[in-house]
Image (cartoon, rainbow, N blue to C red):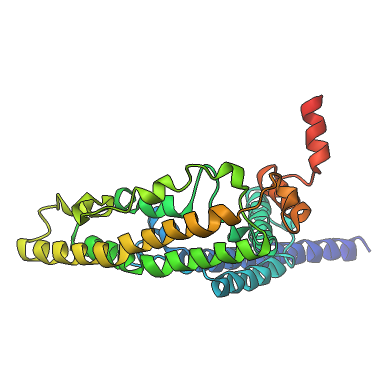
Length: 289
């Protein structure tokens, strides 16, 4: 009888060990698959993390792309439900919980339509684009060509952002008009008379010795054309939209709870930034105490 009990315990141990190994391997595979997806979907983020394969792309922020990512992340989240955090080691369980939170935040961002407001008082997509010259590493000819490839794609991306914000206007999902004073200044700064005045032209003023004379002339000519025909007009369209449509049409209310579905949006923001399932009232009470 004791022998049978021992064999049962031994079998249980090996079974749990096998299940733990299976969960560990599944979690690693899911995480790696999602990370590869993220690198593909967000080329600028990929570049910031040192992944060079997407260096010539800007990405897609259209409604269709938002919906596609949402479906992908919902699938990832469902797969994560099949993994037991308790069967992972301590570090693995911590990583699992953080990863689950990330997926929940991505899903909530789509469901609350926060992508229709792609800027705030501290950050904006147009500011990120304006940082391309200083955020890009220029060490060889390929770096410059990838940079030019991104600049050539900038009008499409800009028009996608304008389309999102226009949808936001139609739905009443905008930033409060009271905070918009001066938000157009970083946009206007990119609208210059001469190409050589554009910050996007800066990287071509001093090129490394690894770029030969003939290649330099080609790059300069292409840069002048792309910045003149693509970049500056794209920022002009954004500026015109901002001044003529967004500023007059932005909501006159202030609180996020006043947005369509605002309470859900507000709660999602709390979960993302506070990382706790607390109500606004509970957080306010902590401040009072």
